[in-house]
Length: 254
Image (cartoon, rainbow, N blue to C red; front, side):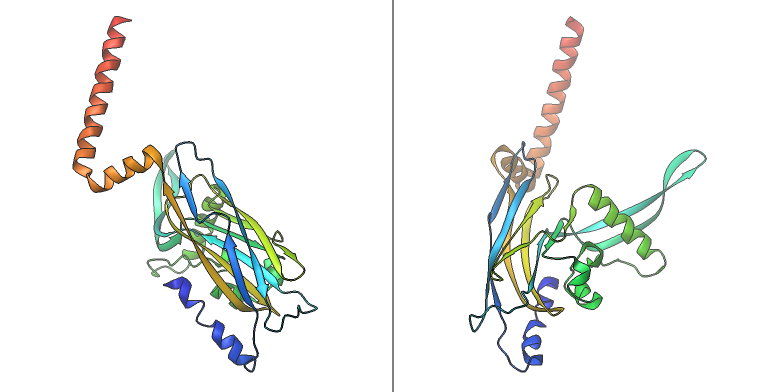
């Protein structure tokens, strides 16, 4: 729902421009489905497309393109550790309601030069503009610290990625960008969002859906765990007991 709210304002841009026709985007992505197997080491997605101008004339000042690859949102709990009596223990905690499990962005230029801070925040252009949605506002002073900690953690894990100045635009019409998909990416529905920016304003946007799912034996195990949880648990216990018994038998004979 949150992603669609950002696109409601696009018709208002056309109205504010005096009803003038604005360019549109025709985007696509190299893979609509990504299958994860036991040997999955990540993937690289190619996001490409074309800019269609209503009069067919490319402006002298070429527009900018920003592409964002975003994973399913999930609740996240951040814990701050403190050293007490020589032991590291959990201290303060903060829960975020809707953190993207994966976020990667590429732009044709530096994000600081594309638009103002308000527009960047509305469209979540940049890692520092991701809406993390804290569950509580009891202590407003702690929120920025935990947000910085969460962003730093996800960046070091390869789950938050920025590649500024890497979108290639050919002839002011065709564009392409490559974004990595981390091996730690979870399964679910992802979105590839493309934004067309002119004179600091987002004048066009488009979305393509991407599905990341498990395949092969991993897919079977995930399905069994969800649909037949009792039998899956019993089977896991049986396998664990059997492996322990086999290991003990071998240990006694060696």
